Image (cartoon, rainbow, N blue to C red; front, side, top):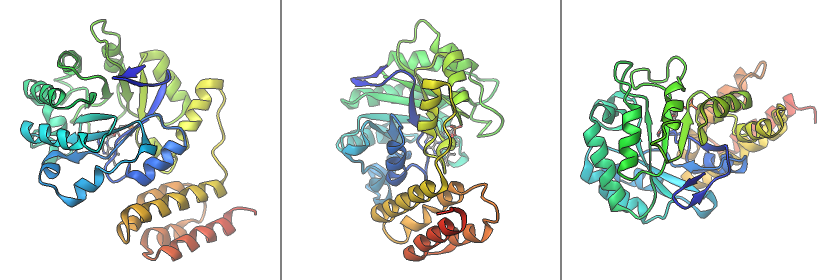
Amino acid sequence: MKIGSLEFAPQSLFLAPMEDVTDSSFRFICKNNGADMLYTEFIASEAIVRNIKKSMKKLEISDSERPIGIQLYGHDINAMRESARIAETVKPDLIDINFGCPVKKIAGRGAGAGMLRDIPKMVEMTSEIVKAVNLPVTVKTRLGWDVDSLVIEEVAERLQDVGIQALTIHGRTRNQLYKGISDWTLIGKVKNNPRIKIPIIGNGDVIDGMGAKEKFDTFGVDAIMIGRGTIGKPWIFKEIKHYLATGDILQSPPLTEIIDTAALQFKKSLELKGFPRGIFEMRRHFSLYFRGLPDFKAFRLKLVTLDNPQEILNTLEEIRIKYCNL
Ligand SMILES: Cc1cc2nc3c(=O)[nH]c(=O)nc-3n(C[C@H](O)[C@H](O)[C@H](O)COP(=O)(O)O)c2cc1C
């Protein structure tokens, strides 16, 4: 499967862009665990155009992350075009446009999934971005605004016609937010539409090897993108690949390795984000790395409230002493 000149193995697994989750420290961990494609968190086009520090920081990528896409969102065509040009200067492998964010303050203003209510504008914006940059442009979106407007089949054809090089579809509508289960039927229909030549990446609720195999076999998608299933479990990429190759379930790593992974991500987070942001942004991850451990409440509380890096690392060692028979 190819996106522009980027070549991917069959049944590749992509890390989904997730705000406040897929920063470079988490991307580093996912890459080490077999993610085939990475994306930045979505970045507001207007913030890039206005050179806002926090957003410009999200544009920072490194060669070790390749292939990596920068994801942009916004409702203004000029700002989207200009931000794509600026993003191009940091040399990502592709630019991805977010037409899927359901959050009210974004979709309600016509950006993200809000664009599903104005297909002509969505097509025009995409076309302008494709013309503005020399990189592959891809889109990530949902099935439609609501169940009465499942527009994805039309959207896929029209976006392909203006030059996008891959389409990721999250099998929910905007109004579903993250509720219920994702419906892959329409993703499969888009993939099997003989007019569609670009790769179709399926997304929604894949959390293990069996689920991934079922999606590949039933819907024929070119790749699967995984979001929430990676948080606290970045080795999911290895697990799924092992299952796809052998049909066997790979055991999760031993706790002592999970502690090493969490500590490594924490150190990277501190290195890249500095103090105290590097600490704050690890808290969600810490909670999920250790879910399910018995009598863990006191440790969890420490991991999500301590603001001294050494005390946090010491807590990880206390967890090792208590739970690992070393
Ligand atoms: C915390 C969080 C942040 C997200 N941020 C983004 C984002 O920045 N850009 C985007 O396209 N989707 C974003 N999403 C949606 C995911 O990329 C993905 O489409 C969704 O979670 C469904 O996939 P999953 O079932 O594998 O999690 C986010 C989802 C979550 C849970």
